[in-house]
Structure formats: structure tokens, C-alpha cells
Image 1 (cartoon, rainbow, N blue to C red):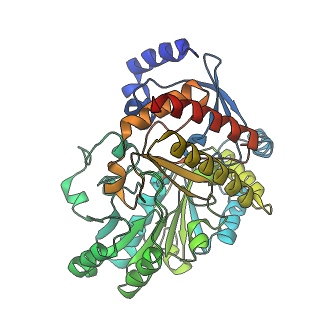
Image 2 (image 1 turned 135 degrees about the vertical axis):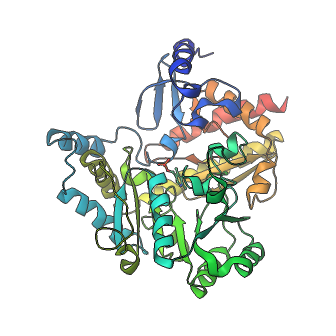
Length: 431
Ligand SMILES: *Cc1c(COP(=O)(O)O)cnc(C)c1O
């Protein structure tokens, strides 16, 4: 049995000086019924906690670490950048290089602005959409998470879902009254929203493959129909690809599904583990952003040299041929293994996977198509599974409503070890 003495001690002290002891809510592990571990270091697909326990990591910093921790090329790039200075607030050619790579890879993006987080990216994209269309309302889908800006804290996924928070105090009603919602994968409901408010809607924003209510796949006609319906009404379609960008393919979900939005938000992977976000799209829209256009958006640390270096190094490795096939194969192996084990031990667990991301929805044996379905999951059983896996040296997301990610550093052996751990946990759950 691993012990967590130092982690417990740190957590106790953390709670005295940080709200809940954490700098982002889900990290507190509340919904899985234990205290967080504190990390000492990480390498490849493994985390080491302050008590000396090691874990195979399926969180990957919530998505960014697609190459694994301490990837040689990324560390070398950051170390080199560090020697030249950590921030200037003056243009550097590396920012241009990162922008150029993003433009080259992501079908919808002709121009891109770098920011510091996914939250900043979605917040800025919405402002731009409102500025360009002169309309006020936005539509989001239940269970999609777009960061913590006011307009998006309505039926949001991620920590909002994990903690069962309906919205958030401190968000003015006037702000959220501009946010209309519909269930994901439900075109009829979406059409009704359009009928009622079509002329007031600036933008429709969605995770093309939601990962913040657990991984939910779009029905075949969902994305193409949204594209058509928004184009017909001059509504800006925004894909929030903060997770799916450079995860499902170099060109993200829009390349994977062949549906091109007007604006795209990026984050996570494009920072290679440092704080970065980006939003981009067609030139005529992006040229409405200051200083070319009137829509204001700025950032002291935007295009930060260390973050840019980590992002560039990450995207360069991802651009090598065959990477996404390897990632997909390994995740498919894990998913198939878990499916087989669930069946063998009579654990009801609906595995939903695309590319290198996956969620097992406990208590489900039919497709989970939207937030309402996801919320019916057996979160207590998930909590038991999480704790069992932690004890066996596997670190999963401390919430049912998140994805598991694998990285290039997860080998077949790591996956076999994970499946052996899962087998013994399922065995004990079945008893
Ligand atoms: C993580 C995430 C965000 C927010 O990004 P932060 O960097 O945490 O602000 C936005 N949208 C999606 C889809 C995300 O997964």
C-alpha cells in the first residue's frame, strides 16, 4: 500500500493559504473521495509524488503533454530560449514561426493571435464575433467547457460539472442572459433556438468533440449541419479546439471531420506545457482585431518566448509522419482492453474513444450523447475505480467528467501494466 504522508501534510498547509488548497478546482479530488497527491517530478508517462510513489499518468496536465513529460526536444528549446531572456513585450521571430505553423496546420486559420490561456482565447473569440456581427447573443452546448469567462459559466463542463455547480455567483445575470444553450447532438433543439433568436446571435461555440463532460462523439450530421445553419444566418461558428487541436490530428477536429469553422480557439498542446492559448480564423474576421481593426485585445506576456519555444518544439515533433497513428493505436489498445475487462467482471462501463482521448462512463452501457446522459453516470463507482487505480500506480483524471489522454511516451508495456491494474481493481469492485 503506497502512503501519502507528505502529500497529506502539503495539502493541509495548502488549504491555509490557497482556497481549497488548489489553484484549479478539480485538482482537489473532491468528487473521487480522496485528497490530492503532490507531484515532485515527471518524466515520460510517469509522475512521481512527494512520497516517492510513481504513477502512469493519463491526465497529461489535462491534455498538453501529448509528447510526455520532459520530452528532450521541448526541454532543450525552453532551455535555449531561457538563455536569451524570459520576456520582452516586443515582437520575436519565434512568435511568427509558431503562428505560421498553426496557420499551416489548422484549416480554418489564416491569421492567429497568441494569448496566455484557453480561457483568454474563447473570451477574445466571443468578443470578436460580437464586434464583427454587431449582435449580442451566443449559443453554447450543455456540458461543453470554454474556460471560466463569465459568458460561458452556464451548464458548463469540467470542474463546474464535477462539483455540480449550476452557474456561478459573481456572474451578472445580464451577462449570462446573452448565453443561450442547447443539448449537444440535438439539432432540433438547436433549430428552435435559431428560430427564436436567430437574428440576435453573434456566435455558436462548441467543443467539436466535447471532452469536458467526458468524451462525447458528435453524431455524423451534427457538425456539418451546424456549419450550414450558422452560415445561412451569418452567425460565426467557433470551434473550441483547446483540447482537440493538435490532439485528434495536426489540424484538430476540423481536419478530422472535414468541417471548417469561422474561428478556432486553441490552447493546451500549442504551449507544450507552458501557458499559451490562441484564437484564429479567416483573415477578414481576424483583421477586425486591434491594431488593424477596432476590437480590442491585448496581453503583456502574449507570445512569451519560453511558452513559444515549448509550443514550437511540440508542434515540430507532432508534424513528423505517423505520430497520430501511433497515438491512436495505443489508445485503441487501452480502450479495447478496458472494454474486455469490464465485460469479464460485469462492470457497466461505456468506453468512448476517439484518437488518443477516451472516457469510460461508469453505469452506462449505451452511447453517451450529451450532458444529460453523462450526468447519469455512476460517479461513486468511478471514485472507487479512481482510488483503486491510484493505489496500483495509475493516475486518472480525478473526475468522471474528464478525458483520459495518452502521450507518445506511453509504451505498449505501460498500457499492459495499466490493464493489469484495472483488472485487479475491477475484480475487487465486482466482489
Ligand atoms: C481547458 C479548456 C479551456 C480553458 O483553457 P485554460 O487554459 O484552462 O484557460 C477552454 N476550452 C476547452 C475545450 C478546454 O478544454
